[in-house]
Length: 372
Ligand code: PLP
Image 1 (cartoon, helix red, strand yellow):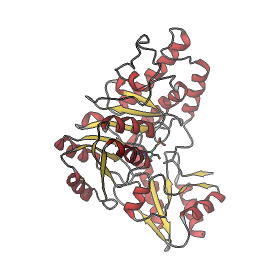
Image 2: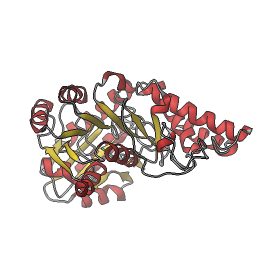
Image 3: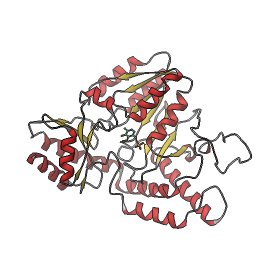
Image 4: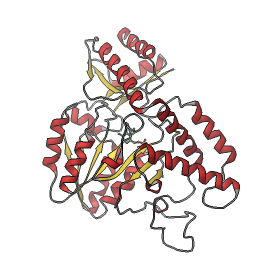
């Protein structure tokens, strides 16, 4: 199989990730529930992962790194905390349903939101329109760092500056950037939180995600329960990470995630991005030779490339490639808003690469598409 669906989840995972999970399965008890050797080992694994993630994203306090099931879970936690009392929110026209659906559901709590609908690969017009949509009742903004459909990299540093100027909290969805674009939370002035998956560019297993909490935020849990701390109290602990982490943690998965982060650091995020951009640039150039194809390529773009065919639907092309052993994703990519913004509402075919993909693989896929 040639796997080009890394924006959904990376595959393969580095061998160190598999080993770390296997070791954790053999050695780990339940962290924070006891002081015996197996429980202590588990607590060490959790602390190590928290610390690695904190270092990677410039959060010096590991307690402000909260483990979640995935990006969606992290986004729900922060959106539902910040927008709890209602108010207005500004989002990009490229948001995933993990942003749009919680906001839509919160309309019954008095939440309203405006969408910045600007063209692909045009950060200047995005920033201009974004600022225009901020109102006196705007509480927060949510922006994907990289569009999961088109690979368009958003100017989050400038977005942060605009948010800081207007006293608006910024939520960054780093689902497609974590692990390939360096992010330093210390450089942000308005950050409510950064939400990232463990299972994509950080090369960890599925069922892992992180919420990197900004400073001076008021948090509300989505569930209460055992934390191994303040057990006599009926109230959920009011400190992080316990406030937001009830129940047994996915220590096996998080052992794998720490190993994934080590892998990314050993390659270098800049190097991973450079490799992915080269592969995508090459694919874009080759696919543009097929006259029926419209290829969405521009600057700045990460390792995600979408295209449409004049005749065949995205699903037909995806199925055709699947029969040839090539894994891509066709359709709406859980981001119908992005397709509406660009005008591809019947969907696209998406190629997404990781550090493991090669030029040979991209060449083979382009050859198959040319044959089609
Ligand atoms: N946001 C973006 C931009 C995504 O691409 C995805 C998943 O593809 C998500 C959020 C949701 O991520 P998860 O599957 O980790 O919940």
